[in-house]
Length: 461
Image (cartoon, rainbow, N blue to C red):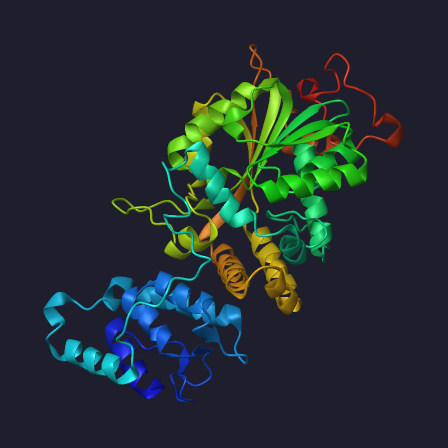
C-alpha cells in the first residue's frame, strides 16, 4: 500500500515526501533515513479524505489510526511535516475540480479505491471540542467557562505528572546554569514578583491563577496578600488545597470567577500569566481597561502572553484548526505590537517588554519528557486520546517557538499617578536589582505609607 500512496501524495503536493510511510500491510516507502509515519488501518486514510489538512491528520493521530514509528523521533517528524506544509499549498490536497476527471483525478480515485480509503467518515475523537461542547456567543461568560473547562478540567493528577511539582503551566525562565524544570519555574515566579515590585502587605490579583503557584511564591517570599481568579473548577480546587497545606489560607483567596466580574480593587499589583490568550481580540480592550481600573495609581501589571507573527499585507489571520479543536477552543494570539498598543489605549504606560521565546521551547520539551516518561500512568489518568493530544500539541509548540513562528513576552505596564510618576527607577537593571526578597523578620510587616510599595521607586501561573 505504501508504494501506491507515496507517488500519489508527492503528485498532489508537488514535492518529494520528506517522511517515510509504513502501512498496515507492512509496506514501507519514502526517502531512506527519514522519520516514519505509520498508517495503522484504512481509517487513517479516511480521516484525510474527509478532512485533507492538519485537522484530518490530528484526528487520525488522536484516534490511534496514525502514529509515529517507535524508531523515529517525534520532533524530527513534526519538523518535516511543518516544512512540507510550508513548501506546498495545503489546499492542493483537495484536487482542483477541473482536474477531477483528468489524469491526476483518475489516479487519485484508483488509489483511493485500491487502498480502501473510500468509506464513511470515521467518528470524531471524543476529545475534540465540537460546537456542541462549546456553544453560545464567542467569549460570552458561559462559553468562556466551557472553553476553559475543556482544556484545564482534565484532572489535577494528570497536570501534576506533566508539569511536575511546581504545577506552573506557563513558560519557565532558564538563566544560564539552570538545569531543571523546577528551578526554572522558581526563577520565573521570582522574576515576576521582582518586576511587580512586591513588598510585604501589598495586595496582588492573579488573573488566571492556575493552581496558585505564583500566589504561593509571592506570599511566602514577598509577604503579600493575594486573590486568584480562574474559570477552571479543577484548578480552583487544587489551588485551595495547596494554599491550605502551605498555611496561607488567611492571606490568599481563590475564586471561581471571570476577570470581568472582579470588582474589589484597588490592588497594588496585577499578574496575568498565560491567560490573555483566552481573552479574544474582540475583548482585549475590555481586558486592558478592566485591569487598569483594578489597579491603584502607581500599581503595576505583568502581562505574560504568547504572541504570533504579524500578518503580511492582505493576509488573513488563521489559527491552527488542531489547536482550536483540541487544545484551546476560542484561543486567540496577537502580535506583540498589537498587545502593547491595546494596553496603552487602556491607559497603561508600557515600561518593559522581555521576550522569553527560547525559554518556552525548553519548557515544552521538559513537559513532553515528563509525559513520555510516565506515559502509561498519564493514559490511566485521562484517556489515550487526551494524552496523544497533549503530546502532539506540546511537541509541535516547542518547534514553533524554536523556529520563531510564535513567541512569548512579558510586558510590564504601570498605571501612573496624576503627576505621571511611574514609581520605577530609570533603568531596568536598577529596578530588578533592587527587588530583593524581604528578610523573614520583615515578612509580616505591612506596607506603611506607600514608601515600600511600587510608588516609592523601590525594587497562571
